[in-house]
Image (cartoon, rainbow, N blue to C red):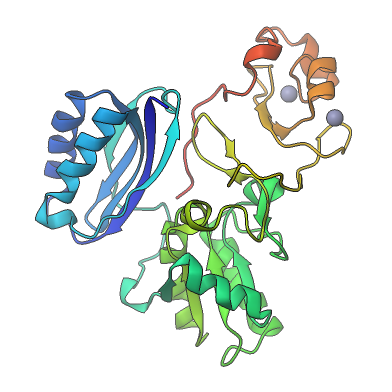
Amino acid sequence: MTHRVLAYYLITPIADPHHEVKIHKVFCSQYDLKGRLYISSHGINGQMSGTVEAAKAYQEWMQGREQFQGITFKIHSHHEHVFPRMTIKWKQKLVAIDREIDFSKRGAHLPPAEWKKLFESGEAFVLDVRNDYEWDIGRFKGAEKPGCNTFRDFEKMAEELEQKIDKENTPVIMYCTGGIRCELFSPLLVEKGFKKVYQLQGGVIQWGLEEGSNHFEGKLFVFDDRLQIPLSDEENEVVGRCHHCQSPANYYYNCANMDCNEFFICCPVCLEANIGCCQGSCQTAPRLRSYNAQSTHKPFRRWTSPV
Ligand SMILES: [Zn+2]
Ligand SMILES: [Zn+2]
């Protein structure tokens, strides 16, 4: 594998985030790095791909800086870049939610092995805080479909959870893709009086690196060209369903009609039969990408992570 894919974030006060953006731009322009990086006064949130040398140089640079001690890079190997370009941006908020987060009220962070003990106890409520379409293609066994696309949805979800479980005694074990969503959502549960809130540290990405596909069914949705990744080489259940025929399917696609661009799970048979389209009417649309069975897995549009 010639490339590394890095996922990382750190919640830490950054006194001058604009300056940090600037020096990041200078550093990254010297290396073969691509990705999406957001910097705010609350911290940094990044996903990046680069040649092994470039990624290593970046990791060492960051880890050598006082400000970013404690940053953890989750690393995958890959044969090429998984981002089309490098975007480094200042953000008012690390994540787009219209609410101040009290980071001092977060849940307890549990490394995968500890989180697993609670999962296996059968007594904890497993809370997926990702988007529905992420859940559709893979999730921890028994995790309910989140319905959690915005922060408001999450507030509603937290209220429903109050009716469902005993706030004082039932452990809530939450998880998301890389850990950052839990950082934002757990304070809300803590504020609502949930006493046992646990976040999967490093999210499903870290789980995959340590536990493989243990207790996880399907694939992990990721916000880059790969779209979905298996957590291990082992045979795993397919939980996604083809948008057209409802048969088990493991891949997402963008509709070949550029003016539709619908994102859908599709089996290979239906993809070919519909020349890469989500519905019949898209197949005769004027701006149609030509269907190529060999290179269908790259998303056609850029992905912006909702967090
Ligand atoms: Zn199908
Ligand atoms: Zn379409």
